Length: 288
Image 1 (cartoon, helix red, strand yellow):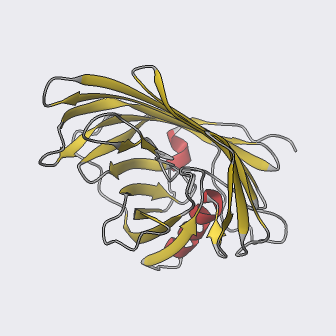
Image 2 (tube, helix red, strand yellow):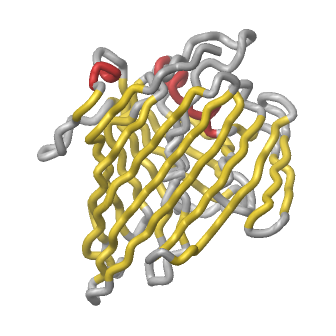
């Protein structure tokens, strides 16, 4: 996908939340075509998208009564790869009146041959650093095995299993499946969101949802979304070594064929947050 990578922040309350991306998630990192040897069937738009985020539902015992903030996703075509920047700032209010602010920053570079990924994560709560991750990963070939190395928070490396994908490849595959009318697929995806390996990601593809009543108005380069096919896609993220029935989190997208998401919902189990597109800006493609 463009990838929204929502990653789990170490909030020191009864409720933890994935700021990924999250990252936000896992999921929108964008890739256009990979290389001349691959079919030019997925062409996605470099863009900057701003989303308004609000609490959708707080389930019993969540301890959360209010969430609001914003997310900015920026995808830059860097000729041989894609540079991704994601920032999520959220304000939380608990049922005991406690308030706290989280700020999650994610940056990455993914090569257009889909074989190399560099990433950096910085999560803070109330201006105190909670988590920093930095590293890189490489695949031997598409569909082959790979290797990931972290330099922060500590030196660590491990192998990635055969079939692992990086987020860009994953998004392109999801769009291909959607165009083909397929309804459900599963992949192993590594995005640097965790120190212990990749996610198993289950995707269910359906019709694009109807616009929500009372959704905020959208501004900017809205022509990027005109006459573009779209689907409703729900992702469930499971730790690679977890065979449990409950995912770590779920991400629902109103996803366009060019990689733009009109809306999304991030469900962490105890509570869920809606993100609605409010500003869209097209970014230029370089002369490579």
